[in-house]
Length: 171
Image (cartoon, rainbow, N blue to C red; front, side, top):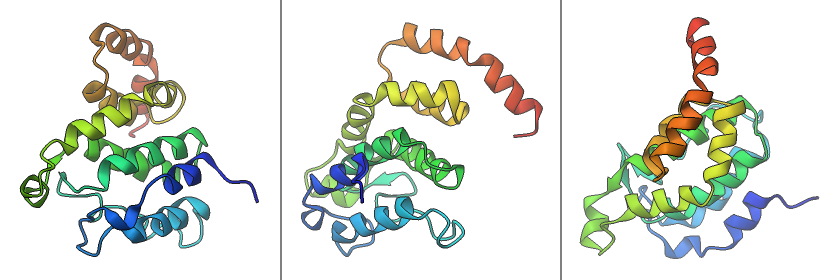
């Protein structure tokens, strides 16, 4: 069996040492990602969420910045829409959220910036998604993470036709 980049990224971290939104610690998150990314059709897409673990109502937990590169690596493998959509949604929550009050109390008030910085490391994966995948979701994320406003405006203009076609079809 071939190991995928997102699996390597999962192995880089001591997840059990990280706080999770569910209150159980983040040691279960590698298995959650494995289920989500390993067999997308296994449960028909039901229960395929990381909400409540990485974030809750856009309030971030300690594991969140570590999950960003896992998500980006998974997106690079072109997962089916059943998986890609929830991954992009979660990434959007992670880069626009803010530290949960429990994380602020624990000395981690900047989880939002940590997530944005981690997303910047995969900026070209996000631009590739904007050009060929879920344009709107990718541009929404890029608007928050790309510090180069001129580059963002250029790429957003290049994607205008894709956005127009998508909206024209009721999506």
